[in-house]
Length: 75
Image (cartoon, rainbow, N blue to C red; front, side, top):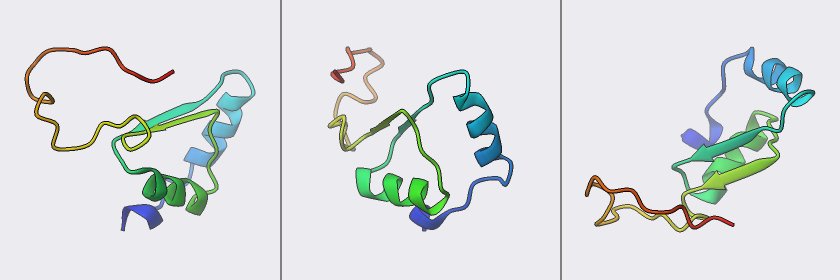
């Protein structure tokens, strides 16, 4: 269901306007295929896409509720 969810109608225009001035990124707690299907379904593109699968942050992570921060291992 998330892969075919629709964004608010103004989102594509806002992202295009911002992209003329700034790089755009999305960080999502979603697996790669689902996130990419959703972005493609909505005609959205970003300079950087980070998903939980690519970042190897699988749930449940025993340390996720420990209250301590760890460095983000993304290059």
